[in-house]
Length: 454
Ligand code: SF4
Image 1 (cartoon, rainbow, N blue to C red):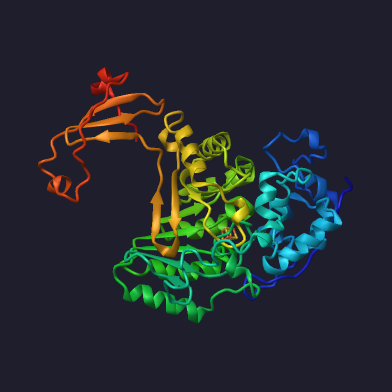
Image 2 (cartoon, protein in one colour):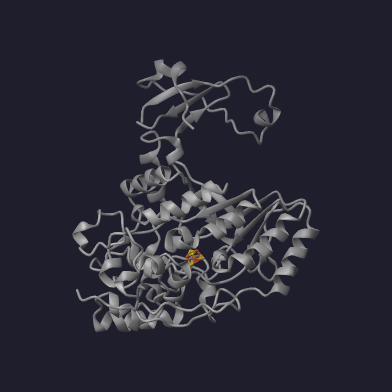
């Protein structure tokens, strides 16, 4: 495959008013920082570890430029013509993608593109980044706003659904447009960032509602904003007495980890407790760059959790999820949620039957540590909240006894302590039914020694 030098372009400026001088990729080889090795042969790359396409397509880009998040951001691949420089597409595929991008645009960072196996049409990373005709051919299934965020919007950009938590959307811009995104509806009409006046209105609302103890800043991706702008907002939130924690939802550690630089981490460390939720969906996304980004956050006192989305052909097997979750633990990121893909228009081809998620959890629970097993949840339509789904381990129960199935499918009796001190458990609306237990099962004699796993 021939080497392609990428061309630079100007797009929406996330740095708000700052001029960024783009590196045009013409740097000479001697600009490589001394001591660094240029890997020119694909074979030399450790499989699954480093970005294989970086030296295939971006060999003229020195490390210092490649590591510059602003360079990565400015040089996103956003048109079909750019995409065809990197990926073999038939004329028919090109026409299809052109059609899809009229409704659902395209944006991929050079970094994320470099992780994709571009010769494999079924590559799990490709499915997350490159448009599919299925987004519009079965696009009428699902809803534009399945979580009813517009309905629950109290001022522009603020979604207030639970008394103690609030969702703050600062922008609709993301470095990569994930094909499964719940907020695909926001991709229309170009990029926007809420103005200072709009952000002040959001802050006023939070100031006036004293029950709010948890502010979730999400997206679009909030880390698209400059660190300075972000600090301006985060510092004002931190000054609100009743706000206890700030959470940031971002996919930057996965799609553009270079953004998690020292400047950002130092700033975040000043306004803790700040928690960060990201979205690794496949173990190949856990690269040295991503690991270093998470490490920088952790060292700055920002705990990092993962909320992956269950996607057809991407991570819908137990083996893939196990590798993903083990990889996350190795970089000290907690596998927190595994989301059933929301019922969003344009994502039906990536959705899996709910049973797939339950089976995956069943296959993990007991076979790896509980820390590695995320909670599988459905985010209910109409903003009705998250429902965790588990394999059913409870076979039957009375007030005195439970019959439980362990992770190997073996059945055990478990003696239930007295419920008298808990009247709510024995009322009509209580949790216990009066079913007679009549089980003659193997392993029942071990009931007293069963350890319930959590
Ligand atoms: S980063 Fe999140 S909000 Fe942005 S496109 Fe991806 S899934 Fe959607």
